[in-house]
Amino acid sequence: MKVTACLLLLASTAMAKPREAKAFSLFSVVTFPNDECTTVMDPTMRGLCITAEECTDQGGTASGNCASGFGVCCFTTVTEAGTTITNNVTYIQNEGFPTAVLGTGPVTVATRAFMVQGGENICQVRFDFEAPTVFEGPVAGACGGGVADEITVGQTSTTIGSFQNLCGTLTGQHIYVENDGANPAATLTIATSVTPLARTWKILVRTIECDSPAKAPGGCLQYFTGTSGNILSFNAGANGALIDNLLYNICIRREAGMCSYTVRQARSATGAMPDAFLIPAAAAVLAAGAGGVGAAVDCNEGAFLVIPNSDETDPKYCGAILTAISMETAASLVTGNGAQFQITVSTTAANDGAAMSGFDLVYSQVGCIA
Image (cartoon, rainbow, N blue to C red; front, side, top):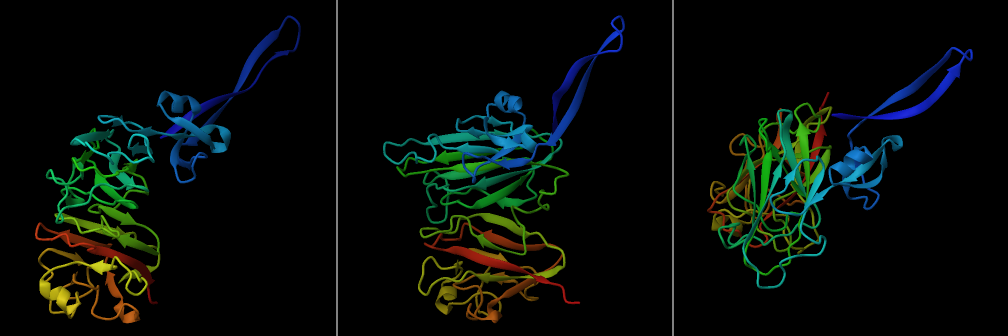
């Protein structure tokens, strides 16, 4: 979509003869794309490059210029429950952000729903949980149910995999939601419990058109780009715990000239907590201190990761470490390949939500060998 601004460059009267006066106006049409832009109020905050008039009409705030001065970087936020988000690049924030809310009692149960405007050309919605986005964590792995906060997303398609809800620390996470042309494209609901707890949320909402290069492949809840990067489980952190009832794909864009990828758990100082990999299965898993290929464990109960093509027999990983070999050696790398670079995450109600369970992984793409 493009906006058009008309700039009057010159208006004059040309006179060849006193009795043959002719007037003319000369206009130049200026067009610019509605690209994402960086606000001047905060370089970490994003806006949309549109005309100043459009920004005012849409209830946004102009924060710096863009498009060589023809546009403004329009910053938009919503806080009121029941709001329909009509502008691309909009933030959902708690009242008074960055000041926390609901930290002192009495606290009552509350539900806040935010609808995202869709349409035939909107194929996906991306939600980025920016810093700080912290809710009440799961109880024994469970979000919601009257015992904990929960964040849910209503969508028109289930091709991205499934998750019942999210909660806890979500800072730095993102999710993609598919849309089949419906309106609204998605509804994000924040439900908070009666527990007095300091909560903050800042969620960037982007709508993605069907022909956009930013569109994630089908079936991906998370999508990472670049030859290397860091991937964390939802609700990771010092007090984190794996969330129940998740089944989703973490996809990695295959960059040019790359034929495979490696995965390792992130290195940390000796004894540092939380651990970079702790996905409980049976009690024997933790006792053995091993998981993945070659370990006598059953990764079919509770929670596990799947790294496709990393092992012909069973490419599932769980336990206290990613592999049975020290993560300080090259042999600790797990290698995957295939047309789609991805990692599948599966947790069930049998997941016990053990304290500090989860994963912190580093991926690196590997070039093709001539």
